[in-house]
Length: 249
Image 1: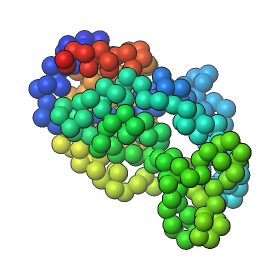
Image 2 (image 1 turned 90 degrees about the vertical axis):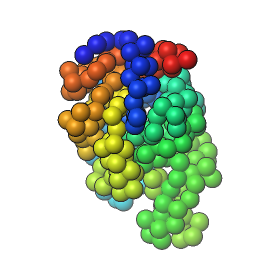
Image 3 (image 1 turned 90 degrees about the horizontal axis):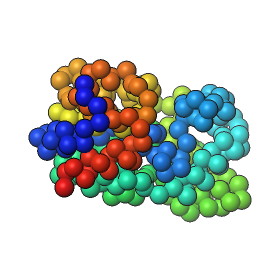
Image 4 (image 1 turned 135 degrees about the horizontal axis):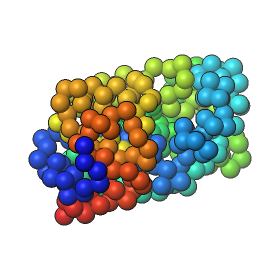
């Protein structure tokens, strides 16, 4: 394992045939979106996820769920892609075959990445659990964030559920299948802003490295796969990935 060598990371990217990125909340914290588990600032420091962000809570007490979601949705609305998102978008299609993300904020797509596999869903759309109709969130989010108007289905007036994966739900089948295929084909994986402690998503880089895939890890704190990584970058992922992007030019 070597640490903080943008030139070496650039060489690994250039020599790869199927590089993919795996991103977690840490790639979006520089954009002002809090993560879930960091000591002192993580969302689960304040709230019990099973009490606020579970499918059971949503069905029993959607107002409680939406009270929890409102400040997070407001931060997501205000957020802009940071240099880490932009660096991955700059590699899109040429050096990087896809982005597997645990994030729900849509910042990868806004930065310009095209092949984004959202393992935990997205706040960008909503579904009616009653009549199964789906809707873009854009028509509902401003009134929800600003006035706490809970989104209701235009067809049947049931409360709409954001298409984020809550506790008690399975991961989206298509996103998981696509992500698993890319992870199996990968000869290089960039792990960015993930503690690699959230399963089953963390199985993807863990299984990849067992198959011989090289890992480059960008994370503020140690991860269980650091010792098996080719390179480890500590600190702000936006700074580290911008350095790698510059080394590619």
